[in-house]
Length: 243
Ligand code: GEK
Image (tube, rainbow, N blue to C red; front, side):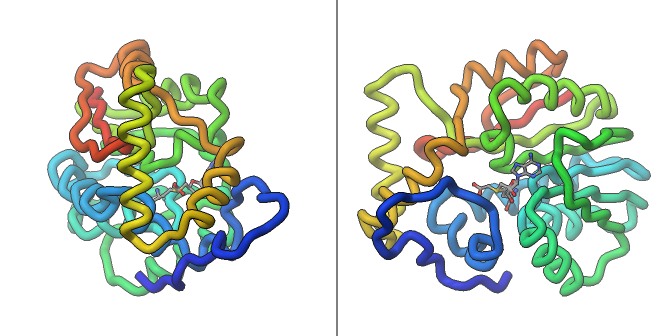
């Protein structure tokens, strides 16, 4: 997937504005997420593998907060000839425009409906798979239970929800340890101290991680039969919940 190099926070600004998924971010997003989120590539590939196992014929797959379409493309490669539809949703117009170009670059017999809109307004139906790959963390905390509940209601029995998130830890020692190693990962990927600290300020009011037990409770409350973390690196995890 084509991407410019992310240098959005490379020069000092007096007041760092809140992070937004605008045209500038969309242009560098592939580079940004790969250098910032440990395990992102593996998570994207594995989402495709999960699709191969869980997506049933004539069902619908939802990719919520699809950005440039990485998860949608990974899923689409694995579900040929199942007469399925993928609904890919993002409320950033710039992301949707680029996503649409990325999807056109590959041939497939699976239709993708690209929706530029809020994931809280989507009606879920006939879903064998739902993906929230690093998206729930951007929703107001008060709206998260309602969304997960709505998703659950629209899922088929045996359907899978894959949800990846940055985690927060109640144990301060663990929080400090894993946070430090995440920052080392960013440094090793070429981000400067200035870029790291300005990005952190930009995300402060925009991205609010939950703890793992909070996620687990939410899924149990909704009625999911099975839940576990299938991947974790430092403070980033990907989880599965099965109806
Ligand atoms: C990937 N899943 O590459 N409604 C719709 N979209 C939203 C909303 C909302 N309420 N809030 C945020 N977004 C992708 C990566 S990025 C993760 C997901 C990150 C969108 C937002 O516009 C952005 O494109 C995406 O969710 C989050 O697998 O930047 O850390």
